[in-house]
Image 1 (cartoon, rainbow, N blue to C red):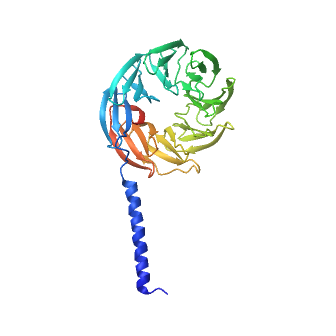
Image 2 (image 1 turned 90 degrees about the vertical axis):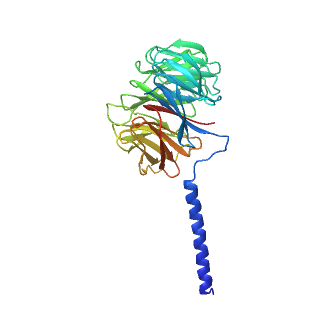
Image 3 (image 1 turned 90 degrees about the horizontal axis):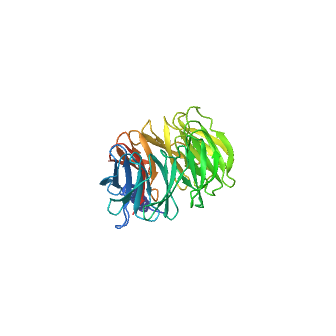
Length: 379
């Protein structure tokens, strides 16, 4: 039988171990985000108000460069192979390319009035750009930064999306209520598929068999069979008639599509396999953007009106405590490795940095005027 001193010693030893474990956990939660000394984690924020790009060092949580790129920069994309950031100047009518090593502009490529979207080939050799003002689709050489081909589509084409096999592009036409199916090599239109009114976004399933097209004005989604290609169905989402979903996020396995509705105050969950509305989750005042983690554990819902992000457990649909982020959040993205969630706040001109592990706000980094677009890179 243990003596009183032995029992007391065992208790104190156990308590000390628990305290050390607790201190270790606290240290892990509070430690700064660290990388190898030769690696940088950067966020690039497009400021539509002053025509600049804010380069944010996420380790230091500060802006390390401000680069003028032209009027109303939008649609930031990292080149798949080169250390380059590509973007569009909506009012300038050109593509600009930023060297991320020196933060200098390498080139400007005129593409026509109101460029509305951009897509890369897998190897970055081809860059597809849409001019909404001229109704054209362009193929830009991703290495020489020169236009290789230009075709007239007509209407008001929007964001192009490349199929998983890289062979075709899907381009929605907002005024023609259709989607152009275009051969990626030649830019020849292979088919034209009628879809919902004013199509806004095209979401492709990972297997490349089907595409889902959202409307900007109606709570409807068109389903396209890409093997034929033909319209399969127009699905009603069951929300207010006068508006469509503001964003879209696809579950990594392709099984569910998450569509936020600002006027309906929630997110529609669409089962892509059965092509039915699986559920509607009420989330905040005006959910306008959604981001899902690669392991499909968390869905982050950005509420533009309330200025916060609500984490939603994907498996249970349970809402976590909302995280205040700033005024009129416009867009969001996870960093590589998904340790941080970044949210651009158009109203308060800053970048919110959220730690995913603790679902808490780390800091706000002031950027330029009217920030709207965001890209993240580990260099």
